Amino acid sequence: MLLQELKAEVFKLTSSDRLALVSAIIESLQNQPIFEVDRSGAIQRMRGLLKTDQPAPTDKEVAAMLEERRVEKYLQ
Image: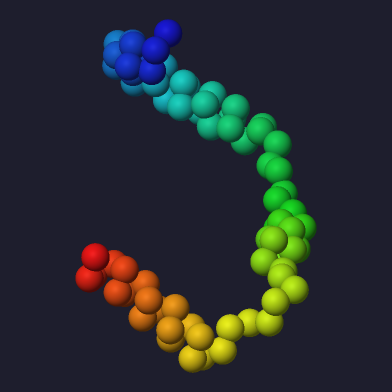
C-alpha cells in the first residue's frame, strides 16, 4: 500500500482508532535501536585525507591563486 493510499484510509477510521494507530506508530519508533555514530573516527579519517607532504601556501601564494581564479571567472 502506498503512503497516499494509507493516508486516505486513515481518514476513514474513527477518532479513537486513529489515536490507537498513532500510539502504535510511536511505540514502533521507540523500539528502534539508536545507533551511536563514532564521529571521532570519521574526523581522524578526514584529517588523513587532508595530509600532504607539501608546506602550506604563504599568504602571497594564496592571494595570487585567488587573483588567478577571479581572472578566469570574470574575464574569460
